[in-house]
Image (cartoon, rainbow over all chains, first blue to last red):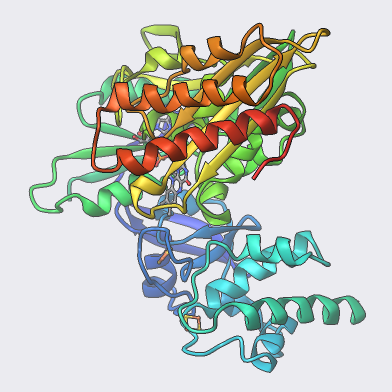
Length: 165
Length: 290
Ligand SMILES: Cc1cc2nc3c(=O)[nH]c(=O)nc-3n(C[C@H](O)[C@H](O)[C@H](O)COP(=O)(O)OP(=O)(O)OC[C@H]3O[C@@H](n4cnc5c(N)ncnc54)[C@H](O)[C@@H]3O)c2cc1C
Ligand code: FES
Ligand code: FES
């Protein structure tokens, strides 16, 4: 095995929404910088930049992470999913439809992160309890809706996804 | 550009790198503390710094339970602990504490090693680990050493770890199957520090109904994690009733004032510490009080 060398720039490869990506990153880049500025996946939003608001939530190997806190070099070899992957088929994901139907979106800034947290939840618990929903989105702040519409939308999406299975 | 990174894949390789660069390197695990700290640093006149990313070292991710000892590799995350069948079985209050950390996103990345080495007085894994009398194994090219968790800390955000050392694991003896435990926490993450308070209680009751063992460790109200001996002494040998539990709880408040001194927040914190301890002890004893 070859020995690792200190680097300040390096090509890293990982998967984003199913595509294999190779991109040059520097030691100070964060995952969110790579997604938004290098890959032009601007659906992922930056709010606080310190792990408090969840606007930047993406899935890394299936689990929700704050992309503002992940150094880009840690993404090497990982599987990243962003909000752009949800309607990749050209059709809105049931979660996205439910968010629209329930007016779970006002300014929309929290929505991409909220959707990704909800997606991780529904994959693991297709029929979550209200408590599981609340816990799953506890790292996502919404300054507009008051959360009720968001919780209702996730419940509804869960029901719809079950009947279309 | 003075910031560089390296991703060793083995502990051995990481120890070599840290040995070679011990004057200007920093270990990065889940990065949830490191990234926030780096943001608040001034970017001007940044010293050369080598980030040693240990997330690629799979040999640091394990939870083992053998011969009565639970060993947890430093790269195990809060999410892993909250989901570990072994931890739920032998020390459920430790799983509860890790489940109370930050948010799902923070628990995905944040590691037990980072939580310990960062040495925040409010680190949530520390009260249960303190109550469990956990120990740490530190390794470097120079060799390895084991220290008791409570001897690891020198003060808030200060530990005895050397720049070339890696925390390999935290380990503890599984409590008696008859023992009971509880972890309670008040306050939202990152809200005013005065609202942050937690208590871990580990209690064993013998056949006669007397408390045979007690470990009480509060969090976020002492500069470093510690068990409160006077509170434990107030419990051991007694049949738990309201008076016994109240007097033990009172000791936690007293100790907080003794160690931290009287501050503007004391008036609020002391009764809250007492009340939270009381609830934690009763919860460990299987009684829910509000
Ligand atoms: C929004 C937010 C909310 C949070 N909420 C909580 C909370 O409720 N409770 C809580 O306890 N914490 C909380 N934290 C703090 C943090 O998430 C935890 O302390 C976490 O466990 C740190 O682990 P890490 O792997 O991310 O550490 P890192 O940030 O990677 O490292 C932290 C420190 O430990 C050192 N280090 C890490 N691993 C090792 C090792 N194996 N050997 C030697 N040194 C090492 C690093 O050099 C660094 O100094 C929060 C953080 C954020 C951003
Ligand atoms: S921008 Fe990442 S958590 Fe707020
Ligand atoms: S819709 Fe505006 S923050 Fe949630």
